[in-house]
Image (tube, rainbow, N blue to C red; front, side):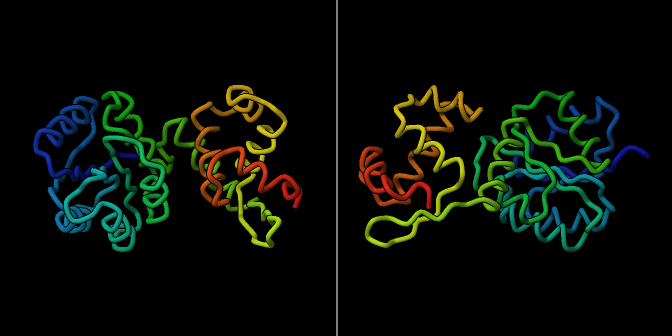
Length: 216
């Protein structure tokens, strides 16, 4: 296919310039720029854009812009560029119609490859973010209902219930991470989320609350 037509939407001129230089150095065609949500939507329509690179902090709202461009320009592939990773933002962007989510510290060459990949129908996400999306899908498809001793029912994801069960068996956070194939940080997040959902004061309290309910 011909070189994809790219739109850069970011409220910061210096950021747009840096992105333009990086992409054009790799032979990509940046055909339009926008500084806010409305400008991005208009430009995407007017210039028959193939790939939209949208700042996650775009004035006017990045997620709503993703949804608007997806509806008005279904052929455009939208990739969000974020200063830092946010699970909620990532999932909201994908639900709104984005095909990718990259951090702004990405090097020029991988950024250009990601743009070309998006134009070909690929989903540019880092390995860490791919794992998070897979985890979210697994959670939706295999959530477990845990009935507590007082009759209340709490829904825990497979990873959350597995983390609690392994903790009950005396495994450390590091050992749980090795068992599940995730990082210790992820295990701590699973445990913290479980404690919060169960309304427990700490991990020990969560284990007591679920001591007769993990197989439910």
